[in-house]
Structures are given as C-alpha cells and as structure tokens.
Length: 351
Ligand SMILES: Cc1cc2nc3c(=O)[nH]c(=O)nc-3n(C[C@H](O)[C@H](O)[C@H](O)COP(=O)(O)OP(=O)(O)OC[C@H]3O[C@@H](n4cnc5c(N)ncnc54)[C@H](O)[C@@H]3O)c2cc1C
Image (cartoon, rainbow, N blue to C red; front, side, top):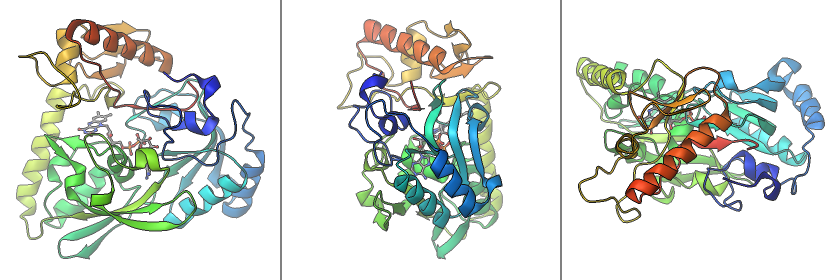
C-alpha cells in the first residue's frame, strides 16, 4: 500500500498497488508536487469552451462507471470520442498541470473511496476497420465483446473464445488480458500510442514489453489509441459462434457474474518468479480457497464462493473494505503456503 503523503497526485492516481511510487503509471500528466491540491477549475473552463459544457462533468461519481460499483468522484470527467480528442484533452490537462487518469470499461479497477483528483478521461472511440486480409485495426475504446461480435459476423477467427471478457481494447492491452491460457498480446501486431510529449507513435508488438498481466503501458505513461490485431480470415461464422457461446457458458459456470466485481483480484503465481509448494496448483484462486478464505468478508466485500480469486461487492462495499480483504487474503496465503499474491486489480485514485 502506498503512503498518499509521499506520492504526488498523479502518481497515486494511476498506480498499480504494490508498485513503487516512482513507477509512473500510464496516465500521468505533470506531477503536481507532494500533497499539492489539484485545481481543475481552469481546465474545466477550457474544456467547456473547446468541446461544449455538456461534455464536461464535474465531481462525477465513478462507482457506476466501474464493474465493482465502488469509488468516489472524479474532479472532472471527459468522454473522448476520437483519438484527436484524447490527444487534445491530455495536452490541455498538461498545460493546466492537472493529472490525468485513463478509464476504459472500468472492469479491472478499484477506485478509491475519496475518488480521483484531476481529470478522468474515458476512452469511448469505437471504430473497427479491416487493415488487410488478416489484420484489423480497433480503436482503444472498442469493447472486447463488440470486437468479437464484429469479427465473428465477418468470419474472422482468433478472438472468438474471448467472448464475455468485459472491458475495452485499451484496458485489455494495458494489462495484457488473458483467457484460457492465452494472452491478448498473441494477436497484437502493433499499437498506436500517445506519448507523454504529445507525439503519436506506432509500436510493434515486440516492443510492447508484453508479459503475463503486463505491458509497457504500465510504466511508460503512454496511452493506447488503437491496436492492429491479427485475425484468421475465411472462417465459418457459425463455428466461431459456437466457440464464443461455449466461452460465455464457461464463464457463467465458473465466475460470480451475478455480483459486481473487477474480475480476478490477484495474479496467478508465475514460474521463475514465485515458488508454490509441491502438489499445489499455480493458481491464486486455488491458493485462496485452500487457505480457507472462500466466503470471508470485510464490510460489503467478500471472497466469492463461486471463484475464490474474485472479490465481490455484496452490497455497499467500499474500496477500503476491498483493500482490507485483499490484505487478509495475501497475509493468510503467505503464512500458509509461502506465496506472495500480487494484485491484478489496478487501484486508481487517492487511497
Ligand atoms: C466478470 C469479469 C470477468 C473478467 N474476466 C477476465 C478474463 O477472463 N481475463 C482477463 O484478463 N481479465 C478479465 N477481467 C478483467 C477485465 O475485464 C480486463 O482486465 C479488461 O481488459 C480491462 O479493460 P477495461 O477497459 O475495463 O480497463 P479499465 O478497468 O478501465 O482499466 C484498467 C487499466 O488500464 C488502463 N487503461 C485503460 N485504457 C487504457 C488506454 N487506452 N491506454 C492506457 N491505459 C489504459 C487504466 O488506466 C487502468 O489502469 C474480468 C473482469 C470482470 C468484471
């Protein structure tokens, strides 16, 4: 857990829990100084003049914009509809020294109870285009489900098993989303990124530093604008639909979809980095379950009875409840199995 007093507003706003304060997140504008209050008034005026008053939200509750249904307000919220708008608002935020936090679908984040200082930009650009016989270009705001539907209808294979993965292309690439033993990066050809200096660069997948649950976006302060993805042409849409339906059914059977959550709370242990006792599965969920933590709760947050790596909001959970429960899981799993669980959920805002 990070000491808020030691980290700048922009560092806190986009940090993975467990990261060091100088591990800059992807979404930082200029640091605003230790404990410096953030004033968004000037930025709000400029955004309203540029885009119209109706496009700029002030003091907006973020809980409804997340799958966890948890979190306090954003000082300022802007939904960007095009890559040009993303670039423009980030530039204006830098000029007014307001920290920026990116939100995709809000399905892998825990927003602090005190909310997020500065500007929160939601990426809503949602175009998919063919970029060759076996390549598509998807904007960062496209939902993974929308992308799968678009591909399946056109007989383009590869991603159909990802049906039911919540969130956007941007969030999936930020965390290198995984399903069924595969990583989304296996399909990425290149990524178009907005750099902190405002320039736009196209980066081949090999330079994205993809690994299990990670990409260079977690440390580079870049924003994904769009991605080109490899697809398999000339597939039978009916067959792709069967695979997609199978994935959806599998998720319904194995995940607590009836309650708000942010997906898996912890990363699975990784060979070479972690040591798991002989005979134990290399699975965070299995370790939590074997530690006897299924059903444990703190306030409104509980370890799911369906899938022990899901922390669910059973009603009225706060971010503090979730953090306490995660610490309890981490402590017990370490004590019983000697494995340190690392967060998969990204904490955003003032903890
Ligand atoms: C029921 C459920 C099931 C899930 N199943 C899976 C699963 O099978 N596999 C899996 O991997 N995950 C799963 N998740 C987690 C989540 O769906 C994925 O991690 C998803 O890819 C997050 O995308 P998002 O758009 O919601 O990102 P958000 O939650 O909005 O953001 C996550 C992080 O990405 C950053 N970010 C978002 N967009 C950009 C961008 N354009 N540029 C730079 N940074 C950006 C944000 O700042 C934040 O730090 C599940 C979640 C739920 C609720």
